[in-house]
Length: 234
Ligand SMILES: [Zn+2]
Image (cartoon, rainbow, N blue to C red):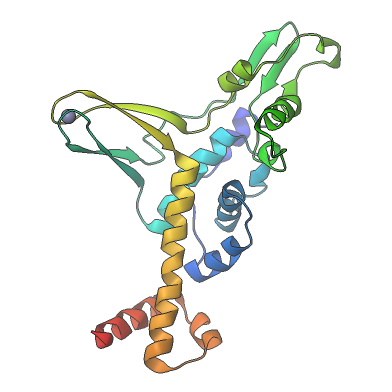
């Protein structure tokens, strides 16, 4: 289980591997959560599947910065005046993480799900919710009569997925937007690494090198050659 010590020792910044390496690693992931865990492992987070989802989401913000080179940001249109509001989602912009359990009765509670708790759940949504609750049940076994509820699980979990409310910079109307950090970071990283394929294609088309030669190029050299090849193609 995660203690405050573990949370304090979590890195605030991460280092990402070359995009070519990340592209190959992400190809094998079967779900969005698996992609998120592969990404964190590649960025040097040990045993990330056993971290609570609230910690995983905060580390994903650091991974976004490591791969993309800037903080995650969401642009939200104000429904009243149509102004576009930028919503910064860097590691320093979200609520700090604090380990939390939800109390359901004497000696009985639920803990926040870890990444591993969310893997391999049944396909049926109701069965999946029940199985997740069973996995996250905490407290002595003699407290089995105290019902653990989905509402308690909601209180315990600290994922960065839910509604965010901001005041519009133009008209101060409250703008409500649904944010899912895991989904946003995985999509942004997928876009960033997909560009590697375009670079490889540009270099192969221009120089006629075989794939293994191009893929063995250092990251910066590949980016530079692809830019030159793109320039020559215009
Ligand atoms: Zn507005």
